[in-house]
Image (cartoon, rainbow, N blue to C red; front, top):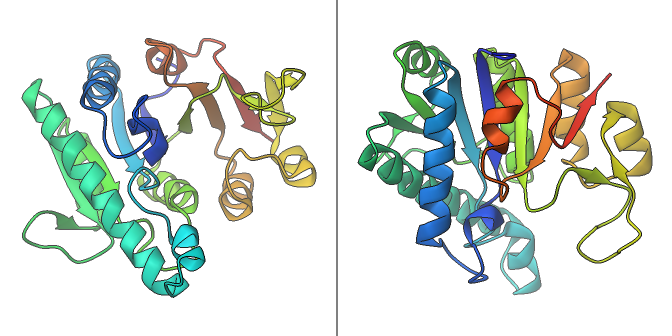
Length: 235
């Protein structure tokens, strides 16, 4: 394995499938199977899940809801997604624990770094929900933060496209693909890889980011094998 411990960042939109909203059962089962495939290779895996398939704080502002309130609503959405993934993982024999930055003791553990590392060492998949627990910070930032905290060797960002482009390839046929790019280039070009706070934290700590297409089954496994998949972002 190229990596012994990884953090997977899943956007909420990645769980919608073709239905455009909510959680698509087939897509969720496929994600669970891919996570199982990585774990079966002996790799420690933690996951940060977004909530954009259910609710977004920035969308709330346009609906007249206070941004802070909207962000907390989005954090709750991430917890819903994490519980759904936990259920799918355990149904295929993968032990999983949900840790949340928001207090929800009836359904999930509070985020505790030492406990999260203990779960990983025991062969459990750890699902981080609730973002950072603070408004105005995205789940991208939460993913970078948790990855550094648990000692992950790479941050794997699963998307709907093949990697990083100079513009949205779903809207522009002439979009240029980058097999490799530096943190600084991402920031200078303002590319929509992850938000600037997340990129800056990864740059500061030297944590590489691999952006790949989740729809191509097997890509997650290829990443941990060190194969050239998607785009790698590093110094």
